[in-house]
Length: 211
Image (cartoon, rainbow, N blue to C red; front, side, top):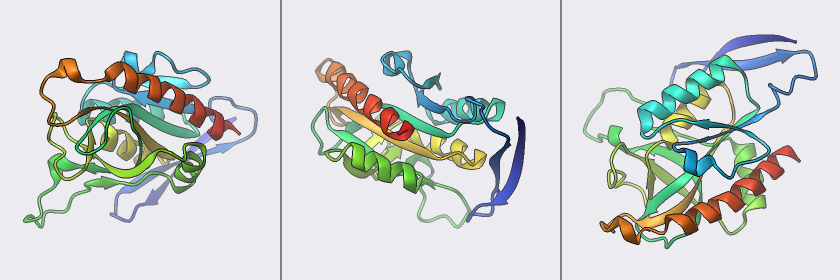
């Protein structure tokens, strides 16, 4: 199989890479890549490739970009636990967009990309597969509590989705709420429950994407 990269221009003027494959039968092209910040969030994943991208938006973007440059994937599913302001653990959230809250500055005219949208087809399939999941913007911030513009926040989503967009690969963010953002006692965070909910939802989505 011959693999080619074609260039296209996004709405923000950025040159985007589009993965195009000539030929048939390559499992590497048809794979789904599941990306999470930590090994613990990936430990339960079966039926898909996985990538531990590290904590924070910079490592997440760099690791995802490198993985997609090395080999094309059919889709990227970014998963992990998250904090929320109004949702109780272990609520599931599908990202309607990933918002880079650290970059938000309404008073600045300097051009920037601060939002990354999920792939519409992946999101539609995910909503059918997980009808009880909430559909909300998910804030990305390098620090806990930094996603003040969103009800749900985590630390990697924008980086992963932005890297996938630049590579021309469909992507989606799925989170399970483990704690209220204002809960400073981390011993009260319900991480095990959130991981269990995330495990079940991820398995459901992998099956749905492969259907």
